[in-house]
Picture 1 (tube, helix red, strand yellow):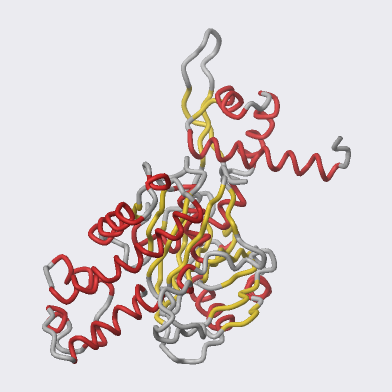
Picture 2 (tube, helix red, strand yellow):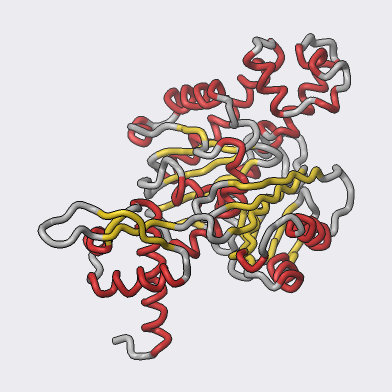
Length: 402
């Protein structure tokens, strides 16, 4: 039996979070309807809603249908009463955004990182966030800072354990940010954040077995198994890009050879584009960048695909083959309900999605692929920062996740 005051307070706060999430998803909604939806006593709901109104997180507005007595007063989320900062870090850029409680991006900045330049990530990030805060109207309304980054992350300790591209080993990023700004800070792997975003705010909230794969500067995966994120022993699960597909392949920056990332990441694609063009292959990309190949971007690559560029489509075929092969392995290992494909290379790229689905249909076990399909991210080019924000918002709402 729970006797300690701390235990009772914990239950009360958890109930408030669950009720707040019901209001977020279903508002405007009556108190009685909330009680029915989550099987909590009306008294508990009334008390929690009163607290949420006092906190300004919830407001009353409108009336519902009467079932015989007075019409019930409806409540709904007050999403703009406060804000949070989402930070998404990859090998080429740092994106910082201000978001509301519905994970809607209100303002965003993108800072490009110079390749092969030694980076003091904590110091640089503190400067960027400080500059971003200068444009915020009231810092007292900031709920917290939420950070996602590629690589292996110990989310409980707030430490980036390993990121080969940024040459990071055991960086205590959470404590550095909290010390600088005295604001609660959350940190996790980027694909875990994206998976939380899909579960809390996306099109796939009902799925309990879900895999999110991101392809951009790197390649990663996050697995939702029986409604729980699978993190592994040290938080290192999901290093999909560093699964080996060719033991005679090139050396990866992780030190291994033949990693999937060397075949499907943007760096691999860009390197092949430049190699093929310099070897004499024609491409619309040359004209697009007026001969300056360093200006080729994932956006231009996708554009070339849909403009019928032979080289771009040839590379896409290979990317779809290798990525599809990797996804078949994930399907056989985890038997998901669906797979979500995000990142720069998947954004607005339905042809890649189709080719990958075709590959899976051909090579995966039929027992594992019945009604299973690869889908694009729910959030398009905002997926990175919405994923970052979802670390904090999951703590606030406790949306359905064990």
